[in-house]
Amino acid sequence: MWYLKYNTLNLKPTRKTLRTNQTKPEEIFWNKVRNKQFHWLKFRRQHSIWRYILDFYCSELKLCIEIDWDNHFESEWIEYDNIRTEFVETVWIKVIRFTNKEIMENIEWVLESLGKVLK
Image (cartoon, rainbow, N blue to C red; front, side, top):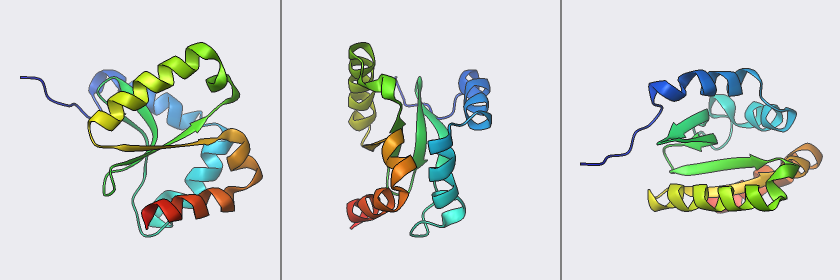
């Protein structure tokens, strides 16, 4: 029987590396949502589901936040992101994407947009 695996040991080193070497937009977003600062919700960084690592995950809402680099707009990344998003959504997790530029230039708008999704 197939079942969903979260935070598998084989991805642990990768998750740790991603947390240690987070991008500036990830750092900005994390500093706004960590320690239940955002609507008293617990977010996790670099949470894995099956073979995919999610940038940020809130288990209470089954919500994934992805912060996309500029290369995510190239055709091979678009295809990969679509497959990945489709899988994540099949296990009832909502995926919301923001760009690096949106995070860097207007984090308050990002948080306001995210807040609207919560309502």
